[in-house]
Length: 312
Picture 1 (cartoon, rainbow, N blue to C red):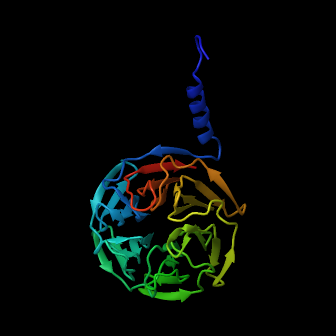
Picture 2 (cartoon, helix red, strand yellow):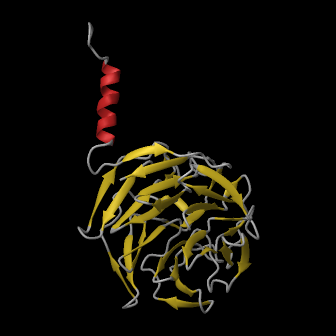
Picture 3 (tube, rainbow, N blue to C red):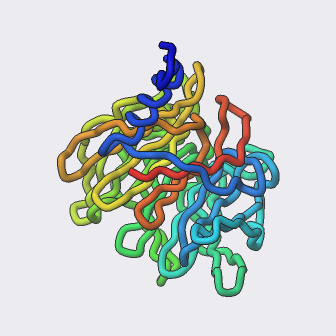
């Protein structure tokens, strides 16, 4: 094109792409302040209006950084008692809980459970996981923590599902997952636990599309529509009745895919992909948006301080 009022082909394509990324139901991405440290294989959760990013590889596996979405600012909080990576974190009853994982700088599986009190900025040790494991996932249903899957002390996948009652500081076993796996995602929707994706025995050449749902009322698992893109090293987050799955890795590279499962419609759909594909990240919902934080832009040991925000 040429002449007055014309637009270049490149500009036109960019415009069309931008409009498509913001089409109804497709979602739009913005950026937040980057993390103070560059990491991967992190975990995290929202508590009291702050988003906590915890542990991981990179600049300190014991680091805890808290983000205020209203001011777009980060601050350091009390470090974990020990460096941990490939762990899981949830918030319930006004506390953060960090469950299992691998020892920092090593690959020894952990049964540790640490509880954080934001009022005192202190950690304390709680009753250990019955099954020591790393690369697990966790979610909260009715104030209880459900810890699913991972790699156990034998270096093989475990299907263990164990439930923690914070008030009694005790764990109890539940029916194991139908497909043992690690590097999976998990989320609680409508009082049920969804576990998605993951890999077999730590190999991202053996990624899974498996999606299973656990009902605490019956202590049973059922199969659900599979994740459209088989992947592991993902992050999962829940908004209302929808489960979102972000990123992941495979031998060929990292995933930018964002796929969302609508529990009401019982189907998956794709949203605008992440601007920065990565794995080992964490996704934390807050006030209708999802903050997607940290993670490795390349498969394996790569790090980032990336902070991207999805408005679905």
